[in-house]
Each structure stands twice: as C-alpha cells, then as structure tokens.
Image 1 (cartoon, one colour):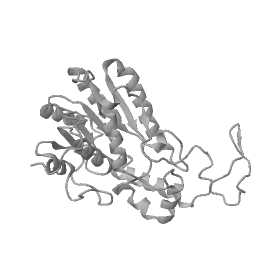
Image 2: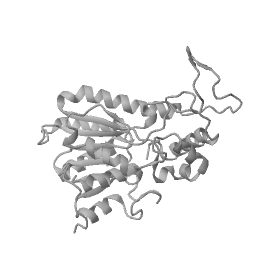
Image 3: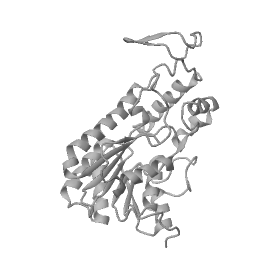
Image 4: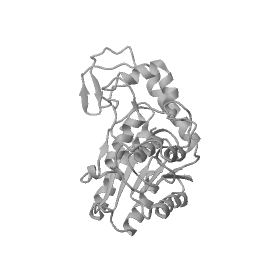
Length: 307
C-alpha cells in the first residue's frame, strides 16, 4: 500500500531505467521520478543497498524497495548488473519493456555510451509515446565537462567533456526520430561519495568560496532537473548540458594558482594571452586532494561519476 501521495503526474506511467540507482545522484533521481509518477522504474547497479549514509534518505533501504513502500508495490524493480557490460545494460532495458511494455526514459549515471546505445535501439523499435516522442535520455556529465579543473584532472575532464559532446551528437542525429538527449552537469553535491571531501574543512570552505550560493548542492536539486528533462515540459529541449546546481567558477585559468610568492596582480602569460586580473589563492589541498581521491575511487569501482 502506498504511504505517500505523488508530487505530480508529470512522468505518469513512463517506463524508466536508471543506472547507478542504489546511491547518490542515481538514487535521488529514481526517488524523484517515482514521486512524479514514473512507472515501472528499473533500478540497476552493482548492488541494491545504498553506499554510505551521508546525504541519503532512509539509507538502510534499497532504492526500489523504498519506491515500492512509498508509492505502491510494483512501481520499481532492481536488476543487478555492471553498466560497463553491454549484456547487462540490455537486460535492464528488456526488463523495462517486460514490465512496462516499452522504454520511455533512460537515465545514464554510468557508462553513458552503452546506456545510449541500448536505449536508442529500443526507442527505434517501438511506436512513439502518446506525446509523439519516442524516448528521453538523460546523461550525467559534470561541470568539468564544460570547463577545466586543475591540477591533475585531465582524464576526468576529458571523460565528462565526451559525455557532453556525445549528448549533443545524439540530439542532432536522432532528433528526426523524436528522441531527446540531454545532460546534467552538476557541481559538488552532498552524497556519500563526496563525504570525505566535505568533511575536510579547508577543502569544503575553498569549494564554497567558488560557488554562487556559497554552499554545496544536494542530489535532490539535480534530480528535479532530471524530472524536467524527461517530461513534456521539455518537449522542445534536446542537446542541452544543464548546469543544474551551483557550479565552480573555472573560467579563470589561474583559479587554482598555488604559488603564494606571486603578487595578486602580477601578469601571467597563458599561450598567446596575457592575463592581468586577480589570482584567487585557495587552500593548497583543494585540487590535489579532490582529484587524487577521485582517482582512487575510479580504481575501486571502475568509473568516476558525480554523485
């Protein structure tokens, strides 16, 4: 029996697959989709139980179980799988078709290429949605898919930049088929993955100083944007990379200058461009601490992702 009313029916009966749904941003998106009527929601991840407790709503309860408890049995199901394995991704899509008769929305928090590949194949094989559109893809990129971050973040920035451009290419190539493809580009969010960064006071304050709001966003903030991008409210939106949370301002290439001996208005030369604006000196640990931790996480789970 449902214990909570829906917030809206914006996503009513939209059959959805969400990768990385057990924790962090993927979990927040799954819960937000359920609250707005999406059904069935196929939650897929390496494991069903949430990772960590910080920033997690009811951390002891798997995402699909929490959705069923709140909105009624049969609203969500879990499919264990590795998002880097094509057969596992395809199996999750087939589960959505089995339970919902079709696939309407694919949210890719991990392994964006495979997620798009199998979602598009299913969209093209089925009749259009009642709205006239065949399907919606929401990819998770990052603010660093739009701007650079230094030091030692080349691989991470390049991978997220690839997500942004893949999103745009799919939007252009499959627009004629009425397939939407948009990307989320969040900044720093309060999730279990980022807890070690947030707990370091100097790092946290340094990041806060770079955001317009002076604080971190929550996964729920980004999830609301994902709901919009998968709804009829975004009927004419595709190829967009949405900076849906307060982002770090990395337009200044000297933002992470770490040499305190330089005066604040000394001219620097970057390629052919001379820069004479002020230099922002942040705690020495910010760039190295954040990125070395990301690399450690990447080695552990096989892929870095926001949230």
